[in-house]
Structure formats: structure tokens, C-alpha cells
Length: 505
Image (tube, rainbow, N blue to C red):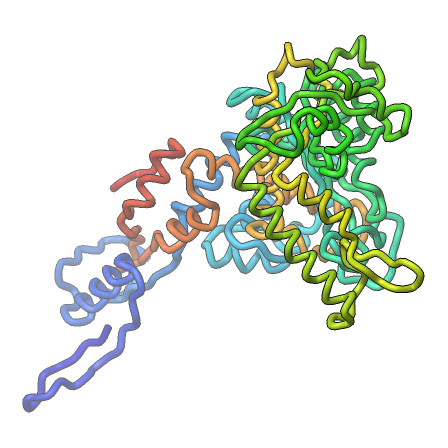
């Protein structure tokens, strides 16, 4: 905005006042221009400390609406009970723009939020461990989830967080990585309710097997909240005979994914009496041996056409197995198998040097296509298995399948923690700091999931909608005035959905 004068048919700029990016800033500049062009008009300043007439200064800008929505959600979840403003600032800044602890101060400054010093921010990591913030956050999350849903079924999964470090230590170790990384890492286990709201998080050594993480997390969750009868859902990575036996011995019910390689044994009766033909949506409720041995494999009598109904008192060497067939899944499986077959043929022909892929076998020093394995795999295309210790009288097969499919919620929470909240890269090296970092991330995840569930919008969309709406403080003739951007339609929807009160004038 400029003040200009018309001279000789041309505009001559007398003074450049600045640029406006919002309605509030434009209002302030217009008022400043008016005062400069007509000094003293409309003013009656009798205060002792008034500045000379005509001066106006923007003294502050703040994304007040966004911060109010975030702090209101934080309080509704009960996290204010921690009584740590530095911890709260780090949690909410991570939702707005995930970055390092040090750079979080820049985020807070850009939001116009007062904050403690960087040293105080780092000290809150030690407080988080010393005062047991993780336990308090877990208690608040449980209370919220129990008041808004059913906790008879919980979902569990694991992920890894790597470090850009050369040396291992007692926690950060090189282990199995789905991303095939060779960096030191930690294994993180996350327990959520069926809507994906976090309930419990645990950190393990980077070389710890995924199957060895589930029981400690579940037992910790049970003991913390004095729970007895819950159903735990996990993917096939958690499937081990000892794991399932320990879960069952602990009085826990489970639903885990089964590997398709178990289908020929589990469905032996079906294949004998019906061949490998299935109808779309067909469900077969049968049993599967607890231990993969020749003796155990005989639990399913193939001479009987009807599938056995699992009874824990009768089938003490078996678990209940549910298998489902999908035409859509079969099409995907066949397409994948065709790609694997072509890759195998390319390796055999010497056209593509690589690790030995699936369906390639070596006989007398020469490679050839494993036709039997390929045929067997094609016969199983479209099948998906589930193993449980829930009898059919407690949960029918269709509900077992539906419960397992809720696992996408925990996967979505992991994606949020890794992308939206950027749990990595992690810049800490000692265990306490790493654990405190995870406490901040899981607290931020709880706030983000809560807002997402209320609004139906992603955290990113909420921040993008509210962050530009500024509240500006302007001092005119020594008196402060507050101006704010008008609410947009999306902002009004967010306020209504979250039940957040905000003055409209």
C-alpha cells in the first residue's frame, strides 16, 4: 500500500506503507494511511503516555484460532493434568509442523505463541521420564477411549525407527528392516483401539523379533488398567506357535493373520471333496494345527466331508482357522504371481542377474522354474486365512474377518506418526531421550486422531485451513486494537465439529 498524489496527470508516490497479506493487515494499513493523511482527525487522546498522533504499529500477529483448537483438544483429552507447558508446546508444535525440538521454537514463533527457552524445552524431556508422563498419557488415552468406544478389542502392530548413526548401543541395534536398511534402529510397538486411537506404546531393542514384542505390551496394558477379557488383533508377523500359546495361557483372546502356505493343510478336506474351486465371498471355518509337525497335521480328518467345529476342549492341539475367498484378491494374487514367474524365467535365462527369486529351484547346478510350487500358489490365489482362539459361539466367522480388517487403523496411525508427525529422523541417542521423544509423538498422535475423528479431516487439512487466519494487534495513537481475519467456511465447520467456542466479534 502506498500514499500517492496526482501531479500533472501522473501519480507520484509519497510514501510506501507496506504490504498486506490478510484482511486484518489491510485494515491496519488503511488506518495507518488515514492517520498519516489526516493527522489528528477523529482523535481525542487524553492519556498521559500517549504517543504522538498519527503513529500506528502492528505489535503482534498470532494464529490464535489454530492454537485454540489444538489446546482445547489437548485439554479435552486430559493431558493438561501433566501441568507442563513446555511439553504441551512441543506436542502441539509437532502437529502443526513436525521438526526437531530446537526448530520447534521457530514454529511457535511463527504461530505467535509464547514459549519457554530452548534449554527449558530440552529439560522437559528429562521431566517426561522422571515424572512418568507416558503413564499419565496412557491413563488419559484409556479414559477417553473407554468413554467413546468399545475396548473389548484392541489392535497391535510394530514398526522400526532408524538412526543415522554408525555405532550400535544397548538400544539402537541393527535388525530386521522392512525397508532393507542397515542402520541402527529401535522397534516400536503400538496398541490402538478399533478406531486407531493410541492406547499403549513400547520401545524395544532394534534386533528384537517382532513376535517377542506383543506379549509385553499387552500385559503392560492389562496390568495398567486391570483388564481381563480382551481380544487382540495382529497381523501374520505376530504368528508363532509360542506366541499364541502364551497369549492363550494369559487368558487373552486373539485374532491373527495366517500365512497362505498353511492353506493346503488347513483346507485339505475341502480340496479333496470340492477341488480348488471357490465362490466369491466363500468362508470356510475349520481348524489348524498349533505346531507344524506331521503328527499335528493329522488333526483335520480328510475322510470327513464336513469341516470340524473348533472346540478347545476337544481340539487341544489346534486353533480355530477361518479362510475366506475373494475374486478381487484372486485377480491381484494372479497378477503378482505372473510377475514373479516372469522374473524367475528371466533369471533362469540369464537375462536378469539377481538374488534367487521365488519359483526358481536349483537341480544339479542348473536353475529351472519350480512348476509345482507355481501351480500350488495359483491354486491358493484369492485365499486369506485367520487364526483365533475364539469359539464360533462367541464370534462368528464373518465377525472374525471384519475384526481383523480393522488393522488398517493401526497402520494408519503408524503412517501418521511417521509422516504427519514425523517420528523420524530422531536426533536423540540415549534411551531416556528416545523414550521421551516417543511420548511426545504418541501424545501428538492422540490429539491428531481425536481431531481427525471429530472433523473427518486430516491433520494437514485442519492446519492448512486454520493457520492462515491471523489475529493482529495494532497500536494506534498509543492504544492497542485487535483485528482478526473473518472465519472461513472450513474454519466454521472445524469449530462446530470439535465443539470449540470462539468469539465471533
